[in-house]
Image (cartoon, rainbow, N blue to C red; front, side, top):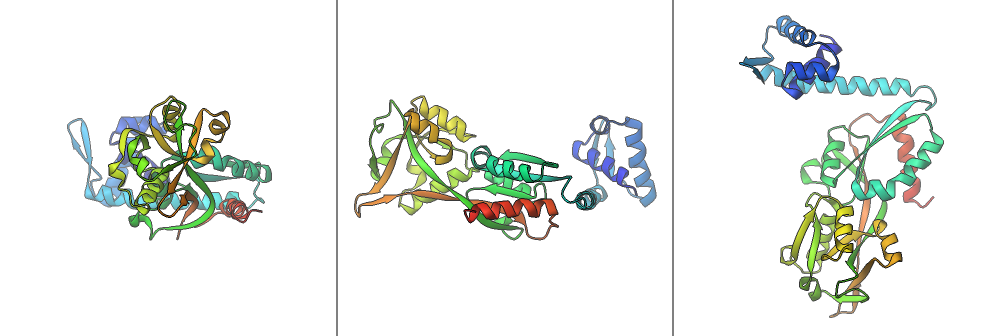
Amino acid sequence: MTFEQLRIFLAVAELMHFTRAAESLYITQPAVSAAIQSLETEYGVKLFHRIGRHIEITDAGKLLQLEAQKILDQVSLTQRGLRELNNMQRGELKLGSSLTIGNYWLPEKISQFNRQYPGIHINCTLGNAEEICEGTATGLFDFGLVTGDVKVSLRNYLEKEVVGSDRLQIVVGKSHPWFGRREISLAELLTTTWVMRESGSGAQQMFEQALQNWGIDPTELDVVLVLSSSEMVKAVVESGIGTAAIPELMVKKELQLSTLHAVRVVDKDVGTKLEIVQPVWKLKHLQRFQTRVASAFEQILSQCSLGV
């Protein structure tokens, strides 16, 4: 069994098609068929059922798919570790970040790291918080940077640490009745329409948690739009539709230009101003090997969290 055979097998198992697997690997279709046939002959098992022009993976194939991915992941980590034995002149850092953190908070940290280690290739993937948590748990990223909570099913695999914070601002556009007001009451949250992020968003999780802490059921809000990015939410509200809770990092410019206006929520029964402060979490796998490159970036994040 060779690494090349495993790589070919995994491509077929992912795409469930010999020709498309060959195209993705830039090899011929006969070479793909030969690799699969060699594995099947060597171990006396069927990895795929051929059903007409389609294939289905067998139980033996599912077992090999799971173990082969582990093997190739470990080989990849070992290769990265060996490349880093040159005083951090080469290597790769794989980051996953939620959208707002990746667009507004993380670039400064990446730039600082790049100045210290210009030979390191940085690969950063953006997604919602839920996607980043899952990617970090499966080893897709060295670190995940998110706001919001980690699903219960992933908590046994991930270690999390606060490395920063952001504040959610409740904002409206110029045509909204709240524009120009400094404060609103809790009850008034139920009198406006809302533009929201999808449920997998860290900002959305934090807003819903804050509402519950304030004694408001999030389902009672009049939600007119649910969008997949905070940038879209910001643009819609700026155009005059509804109200939104948006990370302060991404509305600073709009607040300065007065194209958006932020209002504070006040609990008038006790005269308390209510705020929504969300931590920026650094996530990493509890058991996976950590490269020198990852350790160096983690040190930069730790310095930031200490205000260094």
